[in-house]
Image 1 (cartoon, rainbow, N blue to C red):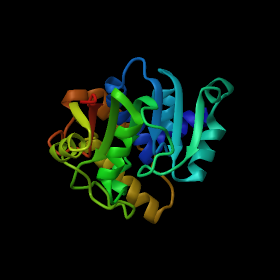
Image 2 (image 1 turned 60 degrees about the horizontal axis):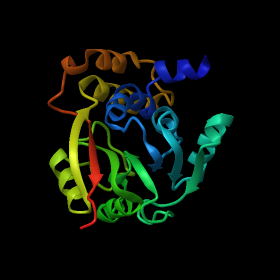
Image 3 (image 1 turned 90 degrees about the vertical axis):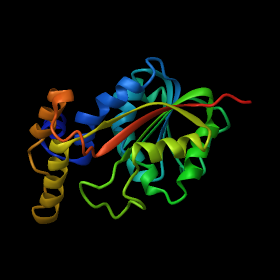
Amino acid sequence: MVRWLFQNVLITGDNVRLCVQAPVIGAMLPVHAGVALDAGCGSGEYTRALLLPRADYVAAMDFNPESLGRLQSRLGPKEGGKCALVNGSLTRLPFADGSFDTALCTEVIEHIEDDASAVRELCRVLCPGGTLIVSVPVPPPAIEDPAHVREGYTPEQMRLLLEHNGFTVTTHRTCMFALSRRALRLMSWSSQRLHVPPPLMVLCWIERLLGAGAPGRDLPFDVVVAAIKKPRA
C-alpha cells in the first residue's frame, strides 16, 4: 500500500514515466519479447513492469551498482528466476553478438558522449531482425539535468542516429506533454526548496486519461522510437 501511494501520488521522474511513458513503450514492445535486454535499467521499473511479463529471460544492465541493488531488493522469487542483473556500460556491452531478441533503452543515450558507439553496441547484441525500443528527451528540456551531455533529440535526429548505425526505424511516438512538463517542473522546484516530492501526480494521470486530447502535444518532453536490426547483407 505504501509503495502504491508513493508511485501514484508523489511526483518523481520514475513515477511520471511509469504513468505516461510506460503505456507508449508497452504498445511498441513485442507481445513476446524472447530474450530481452534492459540497457541502462536504473532501479528496474521497466524491467519489472514491461519486460518480465512478456520475456522468457531478461538481462537488466546498469552502470550503477546501487541501482541494481534496488532492483534486486524488489524482485520476487519468480521474477528473480528469469532476470540477470549485470553491471556494465552501454558503450561496451558485456554480451555476445546476437544475444537478444529485444532491447529496451530508456532515457540513457542523452547521457552518453559517444551516442553512435552506444547504438552500434545495441545493434551488435541484438539478433538480426531484433527489436529496439529507445526513448530520449526532446529539446527544449522541461528541467535541466547536469548529467545530460545533450538536451535530447528530435525524432528526425533519432531516426538518423539509429539508421546510420544498423537499424531501420519502424515507428515513433511522442509523449509527456504539458501536464507532465508542469509536474516535472514542480518536482524540480520542490526538491530544491522543500527536499520532498510534491503530491501532485494527479496531473500526469489526467494527461494519461486525456490521451490524444492532452494539452501541449506540440511540445513533447519525450520521444519513443521503435526500430529493428537490419538483416545481414
